[in-house]
Length: 432
Image 1 (cartoon, rainbow, N blue to C red):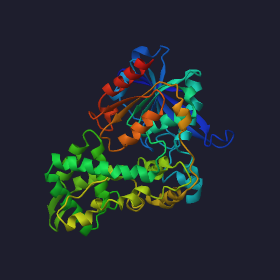
Image 2: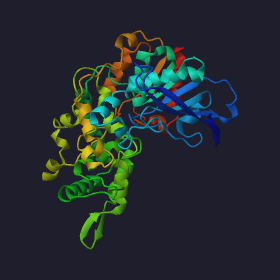
Image 3: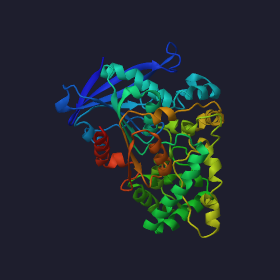
Image 4: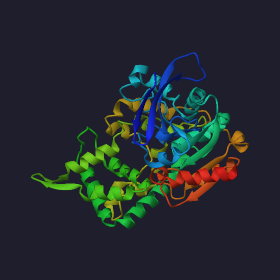
């Protein structure tokens, strides 16, 4: 029985689906998927085309909009929208420190998680599409990692896609994780430099906090061990449109005077733990590097290894001189499985995934070169999360893809500017 209910301007319907855990074994174990259908209140009874939304991540459930927020308002003008919680996220058989022990020990957990990559997500979409559309292809909107999944969709099951729209999510078809992070650290450094140009007072503020963390054992209220590396990882905010401003506001009130001396304030610690914790999305940390695994080479904690090639990110070295402490972001490190209580029980599982050598390709370059599906993609020129050079190489490799390269928006442009969706729709319709 489907449950439908209303919010301002929209009718929502909960959908639950049963799909194979392993699509190569359709008669084997199954998992449950959840998706929320959204349709404009005044169009609820109409026969509308479907738009499937694949959100960023990996490891995040679909957006929980209230009413017609953000890009959803634009989409509802002509589509019936499906907001899918990708497997392992949200309400779709979540994979967490609480649920993964049901699979057994770390080795069994790691084996299980190999079935949570883009290829399985695409097969899930193809399993549920006929039940909703009657077999008709749908428009797929992929944001960030959702764009990676969309390129896999065009590789594995293009017959299911009427139109593909990608925002900040054109992956390299061939790059190893080492190549991805070798390109990422210079981008991150540029974002940090731009932040310090905007807020020069934050250079001293970041140095004070880093020095305090190097000389004190700080444990946040939720049990998170707040190390200097964890502090640096707050630079993840710099990849969003308002992130530089939010980081500045976080840094400016970091300390308070107490009877025992200067300490990090409760308010600062509360904000930091909410930004650092993976409790709501542990799958992001567990499988993040595996999304770049496509051959027999292990990912082997690529972000951690490649960081050693960029010594300017060493906070202790920066504090020994007069240089700025550089923030990081969009990288997952083994120390996170020591500092974060939501990840500690999964440390061995993560290590086994990092050591795997049996990854298979997620993209089919030959099929993409012969693509017949209308595709448009927003490539953010200054994107901290996805390398624009890699994205443009892929854009050129997908037949008929219409790229829109812009520096007007950051990685979250789809969220902050519905115009992004309008522009992509106009590009594919020009093509048609």
